[in-house]
Image 1 (cartoon, rainbow, N blue to C red):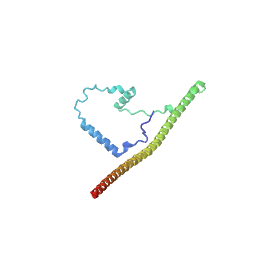
Image 2: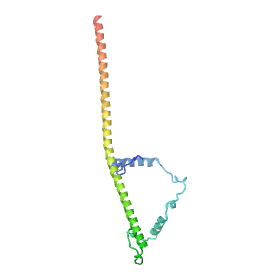
Image 3: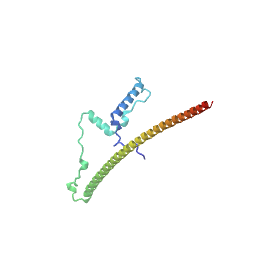
Image 4: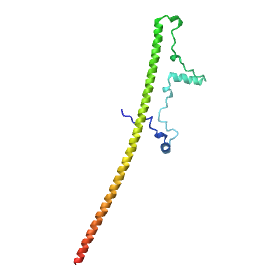
Length: 182
């Protein structure tokens, strides 16, 4: 798979010139698009409830009722021992150890994901710098080729003018010789 974007490196959208150009293009487009009041009438009515999950519905209901948000539960980060009544039960201790192992594994996975994201950011930053250097080099070579082409055209024009001048003087010289003989 080829990457065609470097989100950690590409910052063209932060350039004021690019922002102005995009704004100008949007203005042009909105000038051309003159919607009528009923420009959506041929489309079916949107079903806003199609994307609402039970969790979202509960949250909307809580907000509508002006209830405060529940505090973040830290229960999953706790490593409680077995209840006092089961402290002598090896099975209860095994469940606690399994819970601890699952939490450690979860933390290891999160750490690995973070490392992968840092690595991706570093690679994109390095690739972006290399691309910028290559782009600068490419522009310099294109400019150099253009300059060489212009110099070749000038030389060709000078050679052509020189050839014309030589042929004119040869013709004039030949005419003068003929005129002297007559």
